[in-house]
Image 1 (spheres, one colour):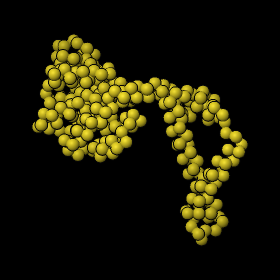
Image 2 (tube, helix red, strand yellow):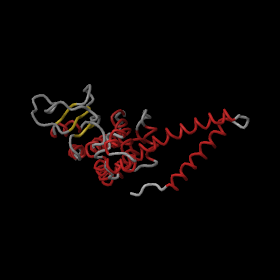
Image 3 (tube, helix red, strand yellow):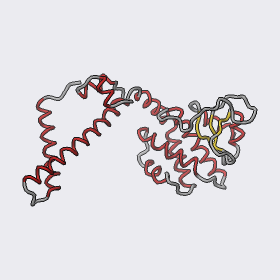
Image 4 (cartoon, helix red, strand yellow):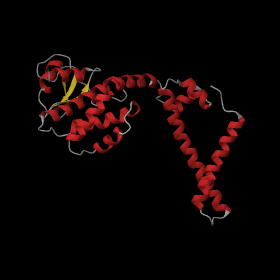
Length: 256
């Protein structure tokens, strides 16, 4: 990648100067003396600097998501890869995470959006509903993380409707969000998993999902057999899945 030429640097500096003075004149007002004008310009330039730092961090993140590594980012920022890692930690591996997210969205995105709309239409207004409704306007893989967070909260906190079809749509949304987390691995696990066996008494089988059942005080790990049995009750919902595509598979088996 080519660096900026001296001419390009001069053009950028001039553009920043114009922006700073435009802001300074608006801030200081038409009657400001030179002292006030220069102080206003200083304030504007520092705000521009802070904004540039935030935009640079966003650019580094986006570059990493699209395949750039720390040597690439360091070269673009005029620093070593170690310097880039210190300045913007946590960027390694984001390209793989983005590919997992794209793969999940391409497979399930349309069904996910339809399910979210169906659930919002049959549930009461919850603290996450407005944000989720707004995110649907620009639904895409780039917005998936935030949509999944809000959709997961809605699916787990919505009251169970009397209408079986409406109840199934909420259960489906819970399963979709659980599978999305498992497939994209974009966040830490929603629920810490310490149990190594199914939560059903005397069942030694390995759990594959965490369930939220009406009579429990929190998520309970469940093997496939007991998850299928529990999910036949409309109010039972999947909180998290231990492997991709498990939640939908279990839900489908439970409802035939």
